Every structure is written in structure tokens, then in C-alpha cells.
Amino acid sequence: MQTRSCSIVAVRGLARHHKSAKSVLNLCGEPRSGAVTLFKCFTSALLLSACTVGPDFSSPPPPTINSLTPMPLSNPAVHGPKQVYISGMDIPRRWWELFHCEVLNSLVARGIERNPDLEAARATLRVADANTQAARGGYFPQISANAGSSRQKPGPTQGQSPGTSPYTIATGQVSISFVPDVFGLNSRRVESLSAQAEAQYFEVEAAYLTLTSRLALAAIEEASLREEIKFGELNITVATDVLALLRRQSNVNEATRIDVAAQDVTLSQFERTLQSLRKQLATNRDLMAALTGGFAGEGLPEKFEFSCLHLPANLPLSLPASLVRQRPDVRAAEANMHAATAEVGVAIANRFPQFNLTANAGASALAKIAGAATPFLFWTVAGSAAQTLFDGMSSQQRQRAAEAGLDRSAALYRSTVLAAFQNVADVLQAIETDRKLFVAADRGVKAARVNLDLTRRLLAQRLASVLQVLSAQEMHARARSAHAQAKAALRADTVLLFQALGGGWNSSSDAQDGTRWATEVTRFSE
Image (cartoon, rainbow, N blue to C red; front, side, top):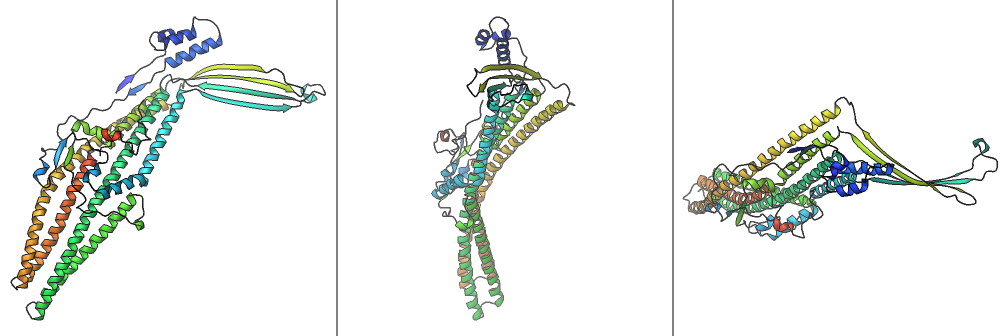
């Protein structure tokens, strides 16, 4: 940040340095008497000498690191499905379309259109934008007009002779007042409000990214639950068949009642697990209904299976230096720091003199019953300056408070940057681990299925014990659940990576897209 200084200089001094010097000299001309000429020169001098006090904001430099994770990343295609990292990949704004799932596209589109939290964030942005535009009105003169008329009949006690006719007084007046922004008070205030509006813009982007990510993760969760429910039903079918076999064997004294009871307990456990999964599925669908602006009672037309949610072949990998420009939360923290910097300038400018220029012009006419008299004109021009001489150190303390606020926002910015890099590192390392888990889970589920089939055959031939059968069923159930969760983790990690890298809100390709939802929002640049 840099600090500006300013001073009021003579009109001719300004004429040598300001782009409007020629107009100033033409306006003022050579020194001569006359209130109008002095007023014009004084006004021009104040306008041209305006400057801004306080520190100027500049974006913090990006972190000087070369890696996003402590250890180098391995090629994700080595473990699990074939995916590769693409350094500097341009993330599309509608990144969820990379899963090539039409029902997911439909769900997210409805959520963007109807989610009330996103609508509230957009409305807050419009409020911030309107407040910024309102503050810009301080750059212009304030013009007001008033007109009045009164009918009078003076009496003898007012010095009028008896029989004086009633008369009407009509007055019209235009007033102009202007507060020159000599020390940049209004400029800094507008700068602060503009930065706050920019921060709110990035809050909208963050809300957009959070909503789309939550919907995608909920869809993946539903696919996982549906697969677990399908295999839960299969477990119940297998356990029921084993229970029936043990009861037949018990009837011919080839199995004990203990064996039958143990298998019945296993069956009841599978049934409880199935009901718990169905409860989670219902709750998850209620969440998606709420996120898309609907009621749970209305239900959802979409259903999600892993067969629809295809893993994207390419994974983006941003450079550390560009990450701080892609994350909306980091950009919002930067905009907040910009606003805090401008507030320091506001506090400093409030300690300098305040100038005010006013001008009034109007006409008044006296009319009698028989006719109207010629109106007469009047005008006034005035200028004033005010400076607080002592306020109990209040202005100084407000400046100290603004400077402390700037330190706070700078610290929060650094904290946000650190959290962003931690988030990306966590996701990248989770991808590394979850791919290895998927490979192990895929191998485990195949082995568990073979073990269960062989054990059931041996039990039917009375060559396996009940404990072996119970163990085989438990291993198969756990392996199926782990496999479904591992498949979900691969897709969830992909979603979380898109989210951690900013979700493509600043994608160059989508910036030109006419369907972009934020077309009514403009960039708040001076």
C-alpha cells in the first residue's frame, strides 16, 4: 500500500499540471473584481485540487510456494479408474456436467434457479450495489427547487390605508449546494462501498459454488445409499436362505437350535442395517428437495445411480500462484481488506476541513386583483469552510480504529489463504488415499463373494460349520458396503477438488455465456 499526500495550490499552479488547466484560466481570466468571477475561480480551484488522503490499496502478492502438497502427487491413473491431472486446466463454470449425468444437470439447474439462500445472496449484492451508486451521488451538486404563493389583505394596524386591495406574493427559487471532495472523503467512502459490493459479489459466487457442490455430493450420496440398499437386500435374501437351510437341518438333528438362533440374529442385523440405509436415503432426498427450493412432501423426480455418475477423465491442478485468484472466499477477503483500507482514508479525511458551496436564485412577484406587477430577481452565492478544533481526540481514535480494522482484515485474508491451501492439499491427498482404498475394496468384494458362495455350498453338503457361514456373511456385507463407499469417495473427491479450486466461477469460456445467471451484476471497478 502507498500513501498519498495532497495540498491545495493556487489556480495558476494547478493550471500548469492539471488536464483542465486551459478551461480554468479561461474561466477565471485576469484578476478582476466581481463576486461571480471569484465564485467561479474558487469552485474550479477546489474541484481541480481534490485528492484522496490515506493509504492506496494494492492486491497482496500470491504465496511463493511451488507445491500444493508436502509430497509430490502420483498419477491418479496408477490406482483405480483412469484419471489424469491437467496442470492449469480451465475449470468450466458448470463443472458438474463433466459427470455426464442428465439428471444431475437437471437437479443443479433447478437448485440455481430456486434456492432461497442464493436468491438472498443476490439480493444482498443488489443492495450493496445500490448503496455504492447512492454514494457516488456525492460527486454531483444537489439541486432543489421550491415555489410558494400567498394571498394577503393587510389591515390598518399594518400601516396600510383603509381600502387597500388584497394582493398575492408568488416566489420561486432554485438552490444549488455542493461539497467539494477536497481531501477525498467521498472518494474513499465510495471506494469502501465499492469494495464491500465486490466482496458481496464473491460471496454470491461462494454461495453458488457451495450450493452446486452440496447438490452434487448429495447425488453421489444417494447413489452410494442405493447401491448399499441393493446389496443389503441381497444380504437378507442370502441370510434367509441360510436360515431356512439350518431349520431343515435342525429338524433332522443335523444342526442345533443354537445354530438356528445365531443365523436368525444375523438376519435381524441385516434387516436393521437395511432400514437405517433407507432412513438415510429419505433424509438425503429431503435435503436435495430443500436445496432446490422445494418441499420434502413434493418429492424429487430425479434418482441417482453410479451408472449415471461417470468419473471425469481429467482433473484440474492449479498452480499455487493462481489459486488465490480462483477461490471466491479468498477474493472476498481481499475485497474486505480493500474496504478496510479505504475506511482508513475516510477516517483521515474526516480530520481535515470540510468545504461547502451554495448558490440560490429566484424570482418574486407581487400581484393585485387588477393585474400583476413585474417580478424581481434575487440571488445569493456563499462559500464556507469548517474545521473541528477539538473533539476530545475522537477523530484520532476513529482513525486508530480504522487502522486496527485494516490490520484485522489483513490477518483474516492471510488466514483465508492458508485455509484455502489446506483445503486443496487435503483434497489432493484424499484422492491419493481413496484411490488405493478403492482398489483394495474392489479386490475385497470379489474375494468376499467367492468365500460366501463356497461356504454356502459346503454348508449344504454339511462340510462347513455355522460359524464359518456367519463369518462369510458378515465379511460379504462389510465388503459390499466398503466398495459402495469407496466408489462414492472417488466421485466426492472429484467434486471437492472442483470446489477447492474455485469451481470455475471465473472461467473465460463461461464469462461469454449468455445463460450465465449473474448477467445483471457488473464488476465494481473504478
